[in-house]
Length: 148
Image (cartoon, rainbow, N blue to C red; front, side, top):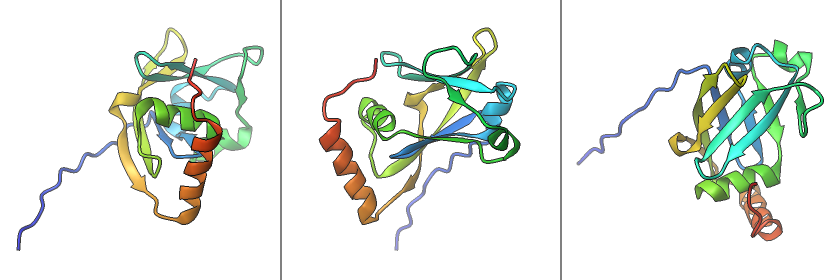
């Protein structure tokens, strides 16, 4: 009987996000690295495949308000956005039935954390029927849209 050898990669960086089919979670360590901002915005560079999370003021366009409850919890911020997440998965040609974890690098000058999506690690798989229905629904609704 042969045994398969697998390599385990341990990721303990506190500056991390996870992406699944319908959600992105900005983990608590990432919010802490940004000094617990009241507002953030998401930035994307398609060519370099970078996702940015930037602390910003309320008057910026397309901001997410972070509640005190989120800042006080250890779970981080969960952002639900089927279209946004689907577009990232399409850009990266990721498997819709998996979730991914990405470690970020803080940029103090821009009050941002940047995540190189090319360095994502697969962290989970799903096999339920609802997940498959969600994938097909996304492909039907958003077949050609691109991130800008």
